[in-house]
Length: 134
Image (cartoon, rainbow, N blue to C red; front, side, top):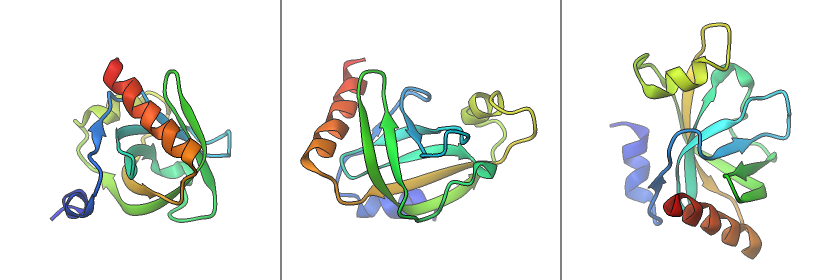
């Protein structure tokens, strides 16, 4: 059983698939390419990223979520799964491989949100509405 399937059974919020490249998650290190969000809910999200960019498994680091019109800053992310994407025909390879000159290892990470303020919850809900209005 894949980790995504196990976590799906534990989810309390519906995840909405996002068009690849529409939303991104940024680290505080400006040298690290953003992760590309593929689904999001009020409880968490999943994103693809380059393995060599040093995304921490669990850390006190806070992240920023970006959409076209909305963003949410200082979001704690707690990893629920992290797996290498080994299918070279997966559409993410075209998108992420074009960002690097060297061969890339792509990973998919599922996270749940840590404690959120009311403003952050409203921001995440706005991101979800933004996607659905597009």
